[in-house]
Amino acid sequence: MDIVNRSFLVISLYFQYYNGTLGKYMKERIRAIRKALKLNQVEFAGRLGMKSTALSMIEVGENPLTEKNIRLICMTFNVNEKWLRTGKGEMFAASPYEQEFFKIYNNLLPETQEALLRMAKDLLEIQKKQ
Image (cartoon, rainbow, N blue to C red; front, side, top):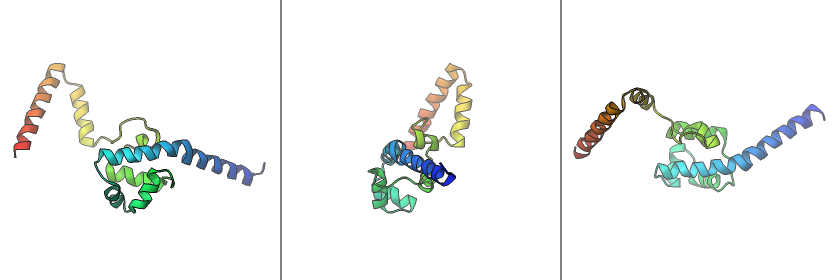
């Protein structure tokens, strides 16, 4: 098999895999992100700079999800790219503040963790009243 035919075969297999099994689950994860953010297709697509019909076609599997759209979704909605591609990990990427907080929290004694959680709940109640 010459290099041209081999290259064509590799590209063909890649697109079958990308648009087949992987694409099937990615389209479901796109819908899950949209639902988690409580956005309809028009709102979600608008934030990405695409038409709602294009998003709809991605969600039903008629159009593949491009690399550009994957990066855009991840950047716009703080989505964990690994989760979007594979389903592994958390849906949303942690912000630097969240990462720092969890590092600190995980190094506290259980009693201190409990006290911090109570304080956070109290602060949330105060915030809701303002």
